[in-house]
Amino acid sequence: MRALPMRRTILTISLFLAVGTGTAQAADTVRVGSKLDAEAALLGNMILQTLSAHGIATENKIQLGPTKITRGALLAGEIDVYPEYTGNGAFFFNIDSDPVWKNLEAGYEKVRALDAEKNHIVWLKPAPANNTWAIAIRKDVAQANHLASIEDFAKWVSGGGKVKIAASAEFVESPAALPSFESVYQFKLAADQILVLAGGDTAATERAAAESTSGVNAAMAYGTDGAISALGLVALDDSKGAQIVYAPAATLRAEVLDKHPDIRGWLEPIFATLDSATLRSLNAKVTLDGQDPKQVAAAYLKEKGFGN
Image 1 (cartoon, helix red, strand yellow):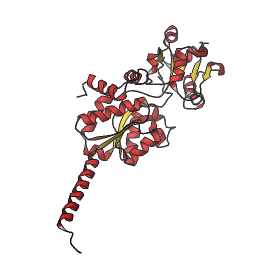
Image 2 (cartoon, helix red, strand yellow):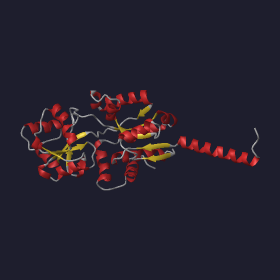
Image 3 (cartoon, rainbow, N blue to C red):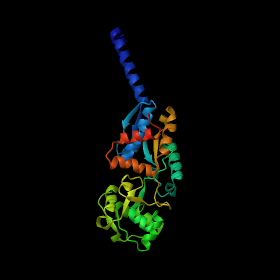
Image 4 (cartoon, rainbow, N blue to C red):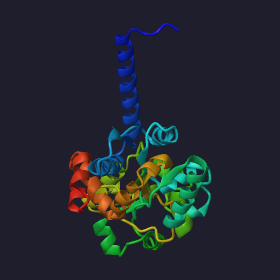
């Protein structure tokens, strides 16, 4: 084969080395994703900022898409890490009837083992928070009637307590939502005790309770919603485990953790500080005060001694 002229040979080698170096750099970059909502963006930014602070090259894929898109990107190797919820393992592996998901530790161990075996995905230890279906009630009503848990609520309802809940059609009709609460705690809300609002926005149901819209004093909520405390509501404790536990955790490809084993020691202590009350407070800064999730994440990490 005819040899290339020296100038072209040098140019070809230079281009090859440049491409090779770029590929190596890209391979060393950890791509951090998240779902679209405020809490996902907040947690995603905590992960991104922590890795960057420890000298790891990162690529920002935060607020990539809904669960299907983000989880699919992780499985396809298009992102390397993102925050997910333990309870979603019930649906990822089509075993949502298993009661294991209603216990934080047991659910975590189940999804951790399944994802490691089937997908080489690692679940780091989750936060002690639960972003699941909840019933929130106005604080004045809760105090006047000594309501701290769904068990208290059930006794109050069964005893003729005047309650009207704002909820979505999904919450009212899905066997895993209100019907599960009613079955486990043995109470039943009549049709005139439920105000069904279009869509599944908990911000609307919580606002209806706070403002007593159409006599509403309770609301469908998620456990870590920022608006709960800000609107003067109380999330009632699901002491009997009627709902699947959705505890947030960092999930990442095993290959990435093998390359950067310190990630576990960096992220798990941060997530350990994120209980439900803390997440509600942080989420409120984003959803109610309009603050940038990046700045809220940075301020929290600095406050807790994890920042630069």
